[in-house]
Image 1: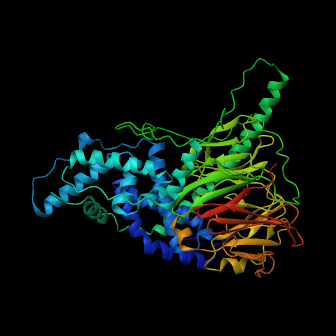
Image 2: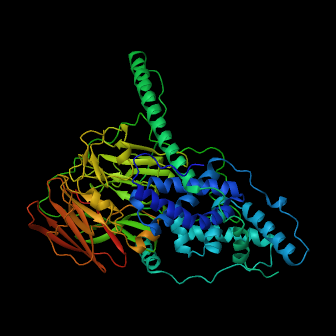
Length: 197
Length: 391
């Protein structure tokens, strides 16, 4: 089996850097992608498409930390864009698996399956917002930056998504303490207030 | 059951965290496919353009009774608007957008706004300067107009990602399929509902404000073109300089990192110092190039910048000779975040942001200071001078 083949003309060092980056980060990226897509194959497709963009921009990215942020942003954008382009067969809340009465491992597995199904029943942008906030532990500002939306929109998506999850899983511990208002928010509100006067 | 959603999500994700394949190999293959699709689109558009010219000629030779479809133009630019936040319970404004949605280019029969007629040698700083103010903490941006009376914001950002042209009038708002190209002075109708990418390749304005490079967002291919705002003409860009290129100070060349060429791909210039730049592990990219292509500004990597995932450089952390790679001294002393605008005649505007102050200096081609001004940028953490051929 032959190894990866870089586009012709690519400097070998750049290719090596990229492959090191993929090896180091693909696990974390695939984990988030699996939450978003609900299928391992689709998750790998999504990550590969994001990595293809990253490779095309590698000359500009140049640093692994920057590349990971770029890949993550790309992945979330591709996920939402695809949902918009093709109305994906979403799992509706009526099709959620029965809540299990089992105990121990079986119960834990059943809960995961049910929560994942409920997560997949959400619109892609709500799902992405919840995964960024609750799985990737991003702040509201950081999650909004990744999704390229205002913090208010991000907050609204999270709240609507959680509301729907809560209907199926009232005992799940949800919610965050709100972060204090950042300097940019104060400046923004100040400028907005002046303009509205 | 009192599991936290974080724990449950981590449990679910662990099932999908081990990729079965060599993802790098798949990424290379898909990257090549993106390139091929782009080439196919470019070729297809060329055929359509030829056909359109033929059909147009026949129509003109025949009758005047045909009703042309209206261009994608809507009245715009009343005042800075805020993103709407009027959500109803269980109603998501992004929902209901299922099915095929293809971002649009401007209508092919749009005839443009005419010459901006703004680019000229400067002997003093213009009364009005337009500055893009941003925050490192999130993608919030505002364009502020500074004049003798103070400053006010004229375009608000966030998802709109505004980029104002050097004339301080034409501007782009990038928001996927709802982007727009408009005029602050409202002298003509704007272009609405245009596909303008805000993530991979943000728009770049030419110094004369008559051209802007646009990438139409698409998960499948890169549709990039140069829009002539003077005539409405759309032309394809050479692949190497198609993604957020830097314009040379006179607007004759598009530059991407280590290569410059005219918008039609001719007169290619490779920077001899590119080898030095590309091995510099701290370098994310080029932020400006002089009219003679002899001097350039580079922005170096920093953690805040990198963590955002945005890759459009704007600072001048290193001022270099493009032939030798040698670092040059700016003609004025600086102490903060420096931004340089290269002008048509070899002069430059240097912005130096220190805390809440942006020191702006106009320096002639020979290096003498022609004019200075201090702008108050408040608590904004980034300040880019974008509108300077104003008035």
